[in-house]
Length: 280
Length: 323
Ligand SMILES: Cc1cc2nc3c(=O)[nH]c(=O)nc-3n(C[C@H](O)[C@H](O)[C@H](O)COP(=O)(O)O)c2cc1C
Image (cartoon, rainbow over all chains, first blue to last red; front, side, top):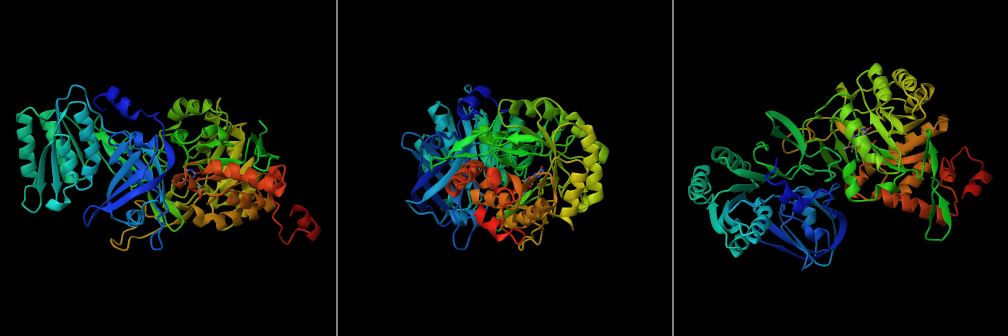
């Protein structure tokens, strides 16, 4: 079970409005040679997306790529005042290649906001977010929401190289304690990340841990949460067809009362309790 | 119940149809397995002609290993494997949910034996259930993709057993994975079906050329979406010609024109499946588009479309009349 149902319902009530909205691309830029940043002009309810919620994107067909299904994508930023909705993604296959062809001014259909997002418990004083690659995009809005609630954030940002660390500025802007760990200098090794986590726990700065984007980091976070008894949540991905709980394509295995059960990532998640989620 | 939808042209078109023992406000409904409570978040479910549930089984079923779906040109292949929370859960939780809406609830069932099919039909003869759709066609549920609906004899036996077990309207959903779908459709009619649904998915597969592995966890799956439309349409045409009970068309319907095509081929109603995954409000577009189409063509009642294809069997004068 998620920690605080009250907070959860405040953010991502299952009866919160969803729309298949026509948005307009306002900018679409390459962040580096792997990641792209898409900013849309959008209205409500799209811009009311809570941290951890996702959208189901109708990627445009290009002359080479014609994805038939939509693609799920977690929210990078949603701002109801500015009327903007942002995504940060890595071009990884047919769908994202097609997505990458969008140009400013293009119309673009997004279904959402969908799914159950992150939960922040009012009792927490300091949380740890631990992510890698585009997983950090999913954690950035969570860190901002925590900061708004006066909760301190340590952000352990893992990447292959320094230039692939995503969103360090966004974590920095909210006053998070930013700890980049890299493959290039070996600091991203599990032993080192475990050391950092243990240090935070000793200092009383780890009331909960949140992760996204790497199976190795997920296992580390899950073990850490179990050993220290702290709460934890993970945002998961899975191939989807409908995005709204109808087709049962996006199931994963979860440990519930000592049994492995299937849950739908789109409907029961994409954010799950670390205790229930299993390695992939 | 009779709906007169006012069209852009200002005239009024009747969309109501009688399908296998049910009167529907319009001929558009979801296809089993592509619809659930979640769609309530996106559209007004009261607009639909009927609700058709995901196939349920008596016992809990986990379903197939992932990946359960893969894309292909203009469609997808699925091997969900009918995960089910079982009959009791369904009766206690799902039936009441739909009770809050006006369209009739059609419950899709599957079972491993003739007796179990009959018992399921009997046990679902409860308040809130308006009709049974027997999925005797799902290609995944039995080994090697075999199913009752591959053979006329088995189809008649299982249909007759359900017919005895319930007074509810009984729809039988056929598989395209059979040598002679018309013979199977006639067997369903002989067994006492009130309508046939034509058709389920077409057995298919894909292989990943990087890993050399099948793209589905279950290796084989069912093809659906616009890619199958001409085949499903052909089957509807063939079946409608030989049956007296209504045919419900299903397979690749994405637009109002697709629905018109199926009705011209002889379908009394249509089911929209895979398209809903891509455009969640597609069924509304089909309903509105059907009405607009009829209005534009001066057709007062959508039933006039049913079987109105002008083929070789139609005399030229008649052909002119429908045009
Ligand atoms: C993901 C998925 C799940 C399905 N599950 C069922 C099912 O449980 N029972 C059934 O009778 N048909 C099932 N079908 C088949 C559809 O009801 C329909 O017959 C078929 O997809 C063709 O229609 P379409 O091209 O409009 O999707 C399923 C199809 C899909 C794509």
